[in-house]
Image (cartoon, rainbow, N blue to C red):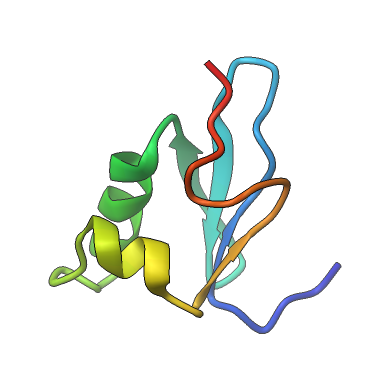
Length: 71
């Protein structure tokens, strides 16, 4: 499914990690919110913190929200 949001966090995998893409490019696997923060910072949003990631409409959370991590 196509999205107009620049950041997509995919559903948790079997190992609990969630794939993350920025502008259609895979950037890594996040195992928690801080990993997503690091990915968006590396993508150019250096000022962003955890609350920015949680509240942003620029991030599409698939298969659960920012607090859904399989452990």
